[in-house]
Image 1 (cartoon, rainbow, N blue to C red):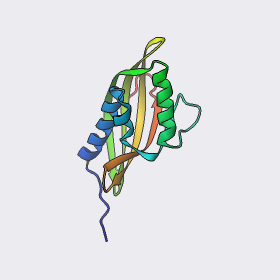
Image 2: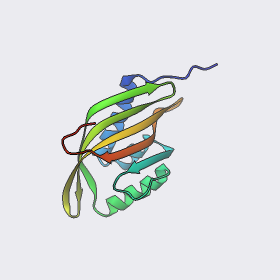
Image 3: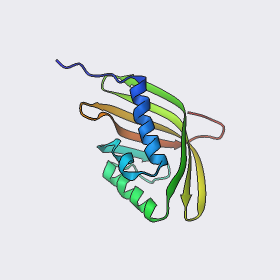
Length: 138
């Protein structure tokens, strides 16, 4: 019987940093490579859950076509909860984006669920973003 891998804190931190770094660079290909095709997404500004990576890719493409790009993205207050087969990563995130209307900045809290993959290591399977109340962290 094969033992199910429990990821280390360092592995989870590295996987989360890859997501944040790719997002901060508005690097579509690198960003979406960190998510499983069946990943789901819940973003507070969106009216409905995105039920797979392809739905989010279409939304991303609409944003970029409309003049959107990430200027900066900073991750703080990181927490890792690892378990056999995966992990939950949560953090506070400060993001600034450029839109046709100018710069917009946000403070949000984010949770990313990872599963272990024998070929790819940790892969994100769910991302949830919510607004951070003023003066709070993760």
